[in-house]
Every structure is written in structure tokens, then in C-alpha cells.
Amino acid sequence: MTKIAIVYFSGFKGATEKLAESIAAGAKSVEGTVVKMIRTEEVDSYWQDLAEADAIIFGTPTYIGSIAAKFKEFIEKLAGEIWLERLWMNKIAGGFTVSAGRSGDKLSCLQQLVIFASQMGMIWVPMRITGGHYSSQGSEADLNRMAGYLGVMAQANIDEDTSLAPPASDLATAKLHGNHIANVARQFAIGRKESPAEYDKGVTNSSTNKIPATLPELLSD
Ligand SMILES: Cc1cc2nc3c(=O)[nH]c(=O)nc-3n(C[C@H](O)[C@H](O)[C@H](O)COP(=O)(O)O)c2cc1C
Image 1 (cartoon, protein in one colour):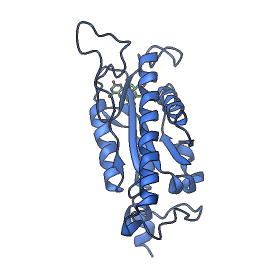
Image 2 (tube, rainbow, N blue to C red; image 1 turned 120 degrees about the vertical axis):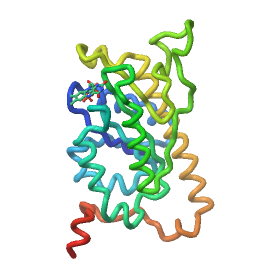
Image 3 (cartoon, helix red, strand yellow; image 1 turned 180 degrees about the vertical axis):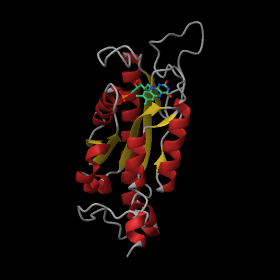
Image 4 (cartoon, rainbow, N blue to C red; image 1 turned 180 degrees about the horizontal axis):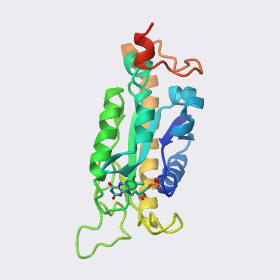
């Protein structure tokens, strides 16, 4: 069984949550995959699921050209046991974001997610398809219409609710990415089990269900 966790924040209109649902649907379409959806506000109840996950997919809206502050709050909880003891090393990682503008500075947001994953020793999975809407033959209905490569870049008109925005093309793009990450996670999990590296031996992923200590807590001991 491949375990996928999707950790996301969605604060303004629920656009990021809508994308998270599409990512989950895509991941579940891969045989033997189970998905856990985790809102950042509730993460303290899900550390065990994250410890056991083969892949963690990060989702945040783009706010002021950056990740949402509430999402960063979650990321800073990783600075402690998870970072120091490399507890998430070699987990597969991926990400998605949405903004109102076509650009909206979403690239900056995805770049930050890649850095967070790298600090944890995770393995980032980029988009599997090329960019859409490249030519006069293209349209807003194209998959990956924002032509991003680090992860899903979606766009949601500010005056529309989630029944219209993000549009079907972005939701389909998210679904495809969820499917891709689940496939990579499955292949990697099988390979890791069959051919463990020296440092994989003895890794149990069975840490206790406690909230991980953060850096200030570790340093105050
Ligand atoms: C505080 C704030 C800052 C925002 N900054 C940007 C921005 O820099 N670029 C942009 O295109 N849209 C920006 N937006 C629009 C959101 O990215 C957009 O509405 C998105 O769909 C919200 O996702 P959510 O409903 O999951 O929170 C901002 C919205 C808010 C509330």
C-alpha cells in the first residue's frame, strides 16, 4: 500500500482545498494508494500519518507573491526533530498553488515549497506534462495552461466561487499530478523495500503519535 498525505492551507475562498481534492482523486486512481487530506490547522492530530507517508504533497494559495503565512507556520513546526533527525528523508514530495492572477507570482511560492522539501531531504516530483496554452491553437481549457513545471499552478478568478474557479482544466491538471506523484511514490516505495540503502535499514516510520519537538523546544532541554 502506498500512503500519500496532502497537507494544505486554504483560507480565502476554498480554491486550494478544491485543488487538494483533485490531487487526492488523481492519487487514489493509482492501485493500492491511500490518501489522507490534512489541513494545516489540524496537523497536530496527524503527525503519525505524516511519519508513515511515502509521499507528502504540499498545497498553499499564493498570498502576496508567497506562501500563505498559516502554511509557513506548519513548515516551521518541522524545524526540530523532523529536520534534525531526517525523519522525512527520501519521502516523495510535490506541490500546488493557486492565485487570482495568471502569474500572481506563483513561481515564487512553488520555489519555496521545493526549498522546504529539500531542507527535509525529500525528493521533489515536477509536472509530468509540458506546458499548455503555448500557441494560437491553445486555450484556457488546456491542461497545465499556466505552463509551470515545478508543480501545479492554478488560477482562480477573484469574483467566482469554487463552482467556477479554478476551472476544470486546472482541476484536471491537479488530478493528473496527483496520479503522477502516487505512481512515483509507489515505484520508489517498492524499490526502497527491495533494495534498501544502508541508512534505510532500521527505519521503521513508526514514531509515536506525539507532536514533534520544534527547534526551540529541543534547544531549551
Ligand atoms: C492575503 C491575500 C493575498 C493575495 N495575494 C495574491 C497575489 O500575490 N497574487 C495573486 O494573483 N493573487 C493573490 N491573492 C488571491 C488568492 O491567491 C486567490 O484568491 C486564491 O484562489 C485563494 O486561495 P484560497 O481560497 O485557497 O485561500 C491573494 C489573496 C489574499 C487573501
